[in-house]
Image 1 (tube, one colour):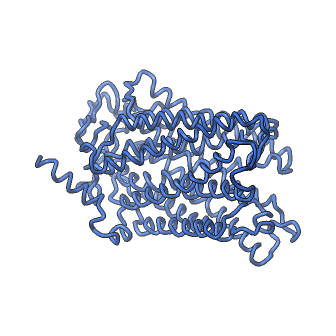
Image 2 (tube, rainbow, N blue to C red; image 1 turned 60 degrees about the horizontal axis):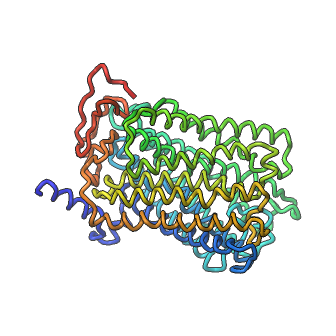
Image 3 (tube, helix red, strand yellow; image 1 turned 60 degrees about the vertical axis):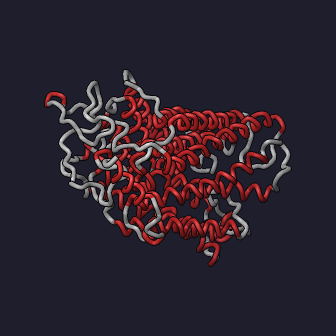
Length: 556
């Protein structure tokens, strides 16, 4: 009991707000800032989920008998904006990334702790501006802000919402800068680039998109404000502007933003698949480089969102070809995970179920992405529920599966407590089944021609919409369960120990939860990552590592 008491005290000191709210609101500890982000984005996930629930209730019947068309427009706009900019974009980089990057590279904190805290405040300010637009009456432009509707033809609160997204964008930029500099300058002695965990590689690639892509979105929103306030003709053709210019600017950021959401999830899945199959990642260097390749190619394919906008056929052909190329590094990861699982000693723990669920949702999402990158198919399914299903499989199914998998995997490290494994597995299965029941019928409805963004539809699509709404009910239960049992585990879960999974990263070689400066002694890395195999050099419930025999070094 004497050995457990210090761990309990450390956990309670870390998790309790006994130091007063001020100590949290002014903290520069990257771990606490990560927890602040978790609380913030969970709140906005709930708001976005409520909007989606009302939409699904409306779509149970073909007639628009629950809300008006104007209200429905505001609902899907609110849902999209909240989920994309206030949940999915910061979901993994700002939460798990903030908590784990310094631990994984052997640093004591982020490179710029005050900038890190400022990034959270900017997200909060942007979020409250978004809520202000909701309270004032909402916005009906869709999450894409398409001009000239957003600059001329709507009377809703575009400027307030746009300002919120503008401010939240700087939060992303600050987070990206911190991750890039921390990865470059604060790695532990011996931690070379190709000894880094794959999660770090994925967050580094994501941060490049943050820093290079987000300013383009900020400038685009600023131009919308200038046109709204001063009547300068930027996008409105009546004033000499070009609405297609808006689409080019918006999608130049927003297609890479898809990888902001899913690339960190890929890093999480690489960690989970390797740990719970007890195999080093197959083709470690290829996976690492593929993360950078995805970030680079992501900036070259924005035009495939504009096949029906009137752009040149030759430009469309080039964008179509580039869209097929960006699928190659993504396929590298899927094949790597499959090969890592091959002949592995697989454990069906909750994080592993979420990782397998990610693969099961990301793969059909990616394959249908190739379909919409093909000109004739894209023209057929453009602005239908086929596109809705496609991007939900990628952005929501993939990202949320990885986020929940990562939360469960690192929960013992964050809190020092375990969660009830049976409930964890139940929730993972419910999320996977509920998601497929929700969105797979939308592939069929969309391919048959059901347009999106309408609160009324032809009666022949009702069965598919009823299935989709039933799936959303299952999905909601799957999302609520972790919130309940993880909260319960904070006080009642079993003591986790420092390394309950027998994992190999540096974060598992410190206490759970970690001390304020992460490591009592700066760690020195003298071996490759992921030393899994017939003999694991890291064993559960200990932070001690065994030096591998000389002939086995380099494995993995």
